[in-house]
Structure formats: C-alpha cells, structure tokens
Image 1 (cartoon, rainbow, N blue to C red):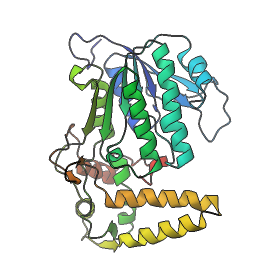
Image 2 (image 1 turned 90 degrees about the vertical axis):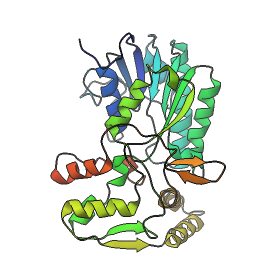
Image 3 (image 1 turned 120 degrees about the horizontal axis):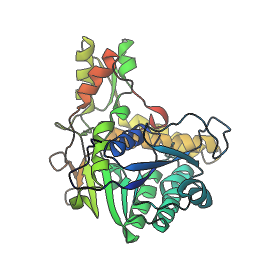
Length: 338
C-alpha cells in the first residue's frame, strides 16, 4: 500500500474531533492517505433525532470510522467514543458552531478538556490542535475559550502542536453570488483596513496531518497561512470582478456603522436575550472587518505579513476561479459570519 507518510514513520491510531467540518474532512483524508487508523468522534446531527450509536450514512471520509457521541458529556466520550481502546494521537478540529459565549465555552473549552482527559487515559501522547490566529488579540468569547484550552493543553504534560491558521477560503467567499447578481462588492472603509494569507482546506489538512511526523513541530504554537502575498478585501473584490469579466464596483461601509449596530443590539439585549446574541455576532463581524489575520508583532502591535509563514499550493484566487467555473462549491455553513 502506497501512502503519503514519510519513510520510516509508523502509522498511528488517531482520534479526531471536528471531522465533519470542511477542514476536519480534509484533515481526515490526509490522515487516511498517510496510512493512519482514524476514528472520528462526531456530534449527532442537529436537525435529527438520531440516538447515539444509531447507524446511518457516514459523514466522515472513506477509510475512517465514525462514532457518534455527545461531546459535552465525558461519559459519552469515553463509553461511545473511545470504548476502552488505545490511541496514540488526538487531532482536534473542533469548534463551536455559533461563536456565542455559552456555545463556545461548552465546545471550545469544556468538550475539548473532556476529550483531552479521556484520550490521555487511552494512551494518547501527542495532541494536534486546530486553533485560530485571531486569539493573538483576544476580545471575543470564542477567542478566550480557545486560549483557555490552549493553556490547558500546554499544562497537560502531553506533547502538543497548536496550529493557528489565517483566514479560510470559505470565510472569504460569501460575496461571489452577490457579484454574479450584478451587485457591488462590500468593503469596510477603503477596503485595505485588513489583510490575510488565506489557506485552503486541503493544504491545511495536509499540514495538520504532517504534524504527527515532524518532530520540529512538537510543543510549539504555529501560525500558518496559504501561499502568496497577503490579500486585502479590495484585492479580493478586484480579482472576483476580473474573473467574472466585469468592471469593479465597490460599496464602502463605514466601520462606525458596525459600532452603532453593536451598541443598539447590546443595549436592548439587556432585556431581550435574542438580541444579546445578535450583538455578539455583530461584534464578531466588526472584529473581522478591522483586524488582519496575520502574525501580530507584540512589540509594535502591528500585523506582519512577512512574519506569517506560508504553506500549500492553492491560492484564494485559484479557488475563486474554480467556484465561478462550477468546479467547486463554497461551503460556508455555520461559520458564514466568520
């Protein structure tokens, strides 16, 4: 059997969390291609009443095993997921679906801690964690929850690899249909307030899988971006219009408008919980409208594109071209706001 595993590297039994998301699926594919035995602990679909352990179509890539568990219940993780079996590595691509405080602390922290304890008891000695580059400047609830788990992982005594990627292709693809309908590309300010080095799901999945066999990635926090130069929202819009064969048209949205929306929703949200949740979503939107997804220089407080490592081969503009041709679908799902 031919695999993508480095010469001399042994296959491992790998436990995976978050395997049904686009990045999780890409990571599982990469792990399977390297000859690892992959078991995925999967949350029950939110729109069904399927009981834990019920059979049905697998939601994880071919070659991996799916086990449905309640990730918020440590007993279920151990009983329904690990089942008393030994594992070597835990790979977590798990993330809350909404970014709202209750959800993110339940998933990004509590569920991760529960899985960490259970996998350690099962013999895991190395944990590969998909985090986010935005935790460098934590303001939002989900960033604090991710940082709290990073700290718990580092303090666990296990080998760890914490990967903090920049923007994902799916989070930068929300305006393709809008432009196809003849509408302008929306930017905040002049469209150059922020920049990022977006990375594809497959490039990131391969990077995460390779962490099992690269000793130099052990016990490190690793920011990572995709290939090429950092890209601003304005540059994204210009390329999309070029691919569509149309003249660029932009609508500039002042950041202060987001501030007003956040203030109104937060104020009314003191009495209406649903609006408090919308205020948090607006805060998340404002963060991404004003903060670059690049390495932050703590000495200067500035984002540094040159200090942001790159990997992979597919660029965001390659992906845009595939989506416009119909060769790819922009899967945005629960994290569309991000």
